[in-house]
Length: 83
Image 1 (tube, rainbow, N blue to C red):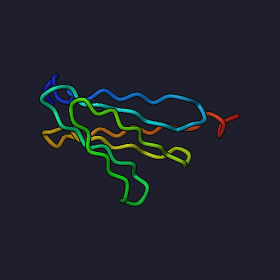
Image 2 (image 1 turned 90 degrees about the vertical axis):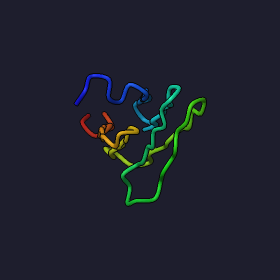
Image 3 (image 1 turned 60 degrees about the vertical axis):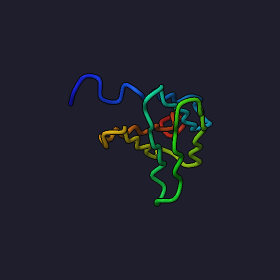
């Protein structure tokens, strides 16, 4: 993969209990974010939009596709599961 692939995407996971993911697209990019919860939750991102995607489960997976259809998968595990 080229070093600049996915350069239009910024993703933030925050909160140890909230299991929220927030992302937005930079100018010239359009990114789709989907929670892997059985197929239903899609949030198209375009420049200027800052949608919030909420995962109510533990250790769910968030998959992000850039305009070239390369995918990144990021799983946030709830730290309370390990305490």
